[in-house]
Image (cartoon, rainbow, N blue to C red):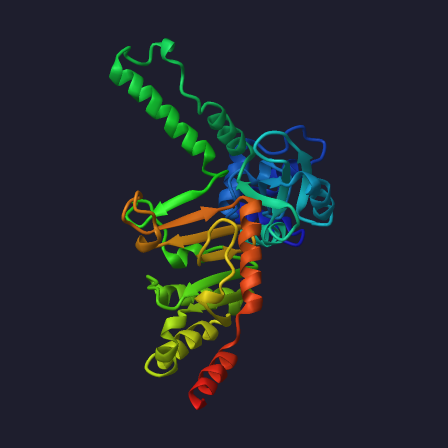
Length: 358
């Protein structure tokens, strides 16, 4: 209102004398609750805006960060340069650092989170709208213990004993979900589609694709990867694995299919190389070829199909999701070793046609 009290009074429906009283620095309670709520409604302000210091509609978030021990102080040092970080505290328990963030919009918080995942040693972060929600969640985790049977919650018979053991088993599984491998079978009620794996990827995609394998929701996957690469600058690399015994077919009848698959990935902005399966360098976990994708050097999703699962396991494909740093590093090293051995599409074609000339 540029200091014009008359215009302000007309807008909020109060007389100039009342407004002068509201603005008086000598008044112990310059504005009643009723008047404050009325002014907020007529000026389309957020509820209780007049009860808090002016923050220009900034929002407060709390971010819990888990780090590797040797990088904790380095992470704190990096956070000191972020203008939106108001406070930073070291805590014990499920996370290592807690920061208070003040931003005008959630998208600015997203920018900070994108920087966080690139800091060395940051394993994960969680965002809370209020400190109360963080306290509540930690309280629930502390209560995730099955009471002993003598507390009278279970009938003292075989069924009661089974219920107690089953609950303990389920609670242990929940606690280990973030620390251990998660197995998702194809027939599970709670599953994940291939293109959904890419959501939230910020830095890199490193993937192994076996040429002869089928990939569900392939078109959706390509669209998701194309957006990540071309819109957000994600670096994508992929090795397509071919079978040596089908070399003659690849050179003739199969060549259009090989070229089509290459062009589909290349069109997303992905760098593609080819490798024959008998040249594959295995990891120390598996003796043979593995199909996997590494996202942001933080997660690995490895695929097992029916014919690669042991006889004593269920006849169904499955995806294993790993987040342990040592396992992620193992797969990253495996990808790098095979990437250095793989060749571009142009080199692959030249070798194919050179073979025909012979």
